[in-house]
Image 1 (cartoon, rainbow, N blue to C red):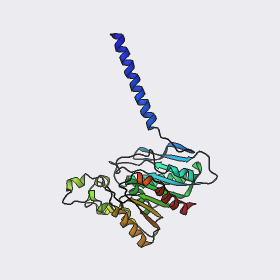
Image 2 (image 1 turned 180 degrees about the horizontal axis):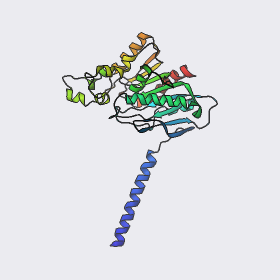
Image 3 (image 1 turned 90 degrees about the horizontal axis):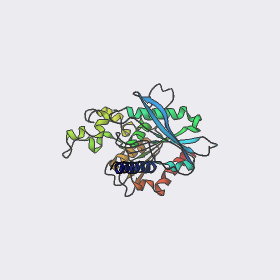
Image 4 (image 1 turned 45 degrees about the horizontal axis):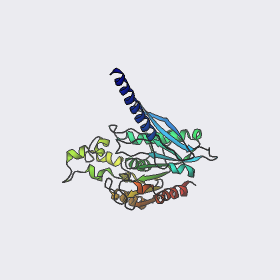
Length: 295
């Protein structure tokens, strides 16, 4: 019986090890051919917590400095990670990708945008080390990340920056442009104040938008647009159930009125992200936008 028990234990351990090993292999990121990854580069320390980014570069060193795409992940400001960024296919077209982490809820605004600015400063300050062009930085994000990159491109720069956190282009994928009018943040006949107070927007700001309207405006690209903003590419799903298409339409319209170079691409049949954003057609829209600016 003891021999049988030991044998059973050994078999169970083998099965468990094999399962864990298989999961690890499954989770291991597969990089496009010709792309190398420099993982977990510390870019700042915020609230006694180290913040990291991953750099994706051509395996073969480029003779020219590379324009940078800074990817900012989504997840409602409380989920998500820097792992598996979009746009790695751009590396073969002569771009570097920097995928950043940032403080998530329960950290409150402006922690998130401050981290984005710190990442930009790091990329500029270490451009020579990694072969990057500090004058060609694009911020690209989806959903909550789209919100952050849009704010990064529209807010006034902080005063007395030793290294400017100015970026040179924005790719905004279906980001909330105006927190004051985002449905989860607004009390209606179908949405109670209690429900609104538990929304991601309220958790981000520390209160409901009706209690802190000025803070909500500060944290909204729509309310920060100015004629000096960098070029924008806004892409939004035609049938987005999470962030209304109207959010991007209003932002785009205001930018046009003020003379900001802006392009709105409505992705037909798409919801809140999805495969429609990853097609050759969508990729071409992105590559044309970037190449026109930087190549």
